[in-house]
Length: 213
Ligand SMILES: [Mg+2]
Image (cartoon, rainbow, N blue to C red; front, side, top):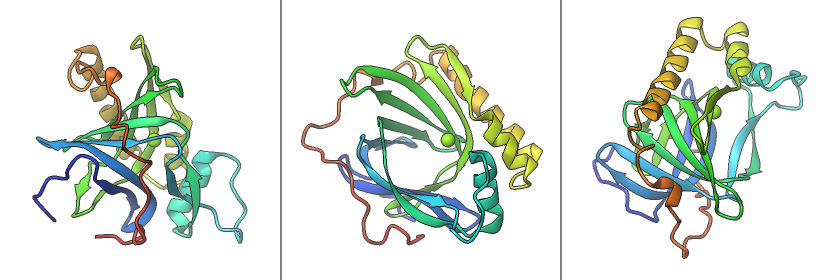
């Protein structure tokens, strides 16, 4: 653990960790790190690591079942992926979500996205969390809708998480929507106008991306 804040432009690794095992790894540029809030930049084209079903096992039909079976079998392999939309990740200490702001290729603001995930745990050069399937899409006019409710349901049905956990995840999403409707930060802030430092290149994973601090 370190008490030292990260500096803008520094690359850190956002790791999803499931039950003590690395699940995914994303290199991220630090935009801001202060007052219990960490803001990270993941531009389009960033290469990251995602978990995939090993070839020895049949692949489930839908994503929810596939994810649940990986969580239960703990046998995933890693594959490289390229991130397809530029996003800013705003993550507050003690909250079970990241609020994402996204832009179209022409740098017009696309809208917000609530990524339900575990409260972060901060290490020296990594931020550890775990994606929790459910998401919320918020358009630029602030209308919103749930995304991937079927995936969350599959995690419960397959036994990867219990119903109580699923209810907590949903409640975290509703808390983010309450912030939206009350125009609380970050929704009250001019993030839609934000631009990355033009000198920044897409962040790259360090060699030890698999290491859990
Ligand atoms: Mg998600």
